[in-house]
Length: 213
Image (tube, rainbow, N blue to C red; front, side, top):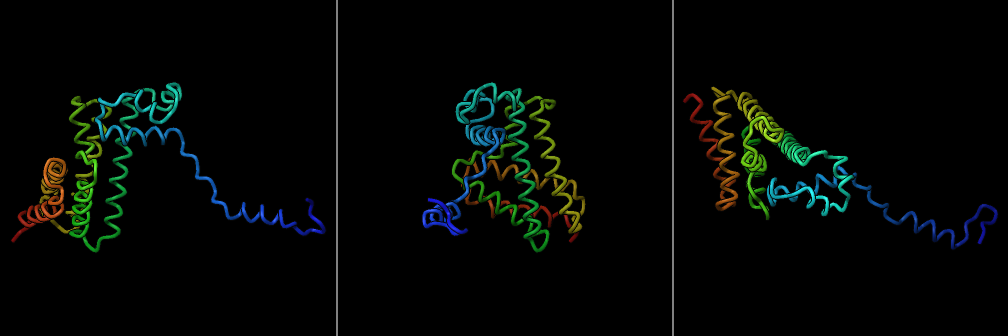
């Protein structure tokens, strides 16, 4: 049917209204992101060396040519996976700093986040500690990403300690990072529900012991 004098027919109106009310199709996820998504799931659940490129290719549903166009080696993909995890942690701590009223509150939020992560189904500990266990060579690209992230985490911790004038903040930051590492392992091997309280109070005890009485 055709329009007359600028008016729409009932059929035209129905089509137009249906088009307006229909949800827009979701944006297509880039292939590279789909590959990293699959790697994030498989690497964390099964281990870096246990997951082959072929397994990731099959899960994403792409060809080998497409895979290797984005990641020339499997190590390149492992680096991308760890860099994504590192960015997640950076974003989480930035959010904690925004939400917290003071520095002790930042540490409380971080402890709660680690505790919540430990209780999540499929938790297998810290992905960076796991990666370091599988790649012993300190000069390997995977280890360089791990080491860079751990340096960032220690420096971030030290900066927080400096804000509340904790003496010898570099040494205390090392101790708090050690507590965090232990909490991640304990959350995997022991009762994850105890992680938040134990980590937060142990951290406060370390800081109190380092401060002048």
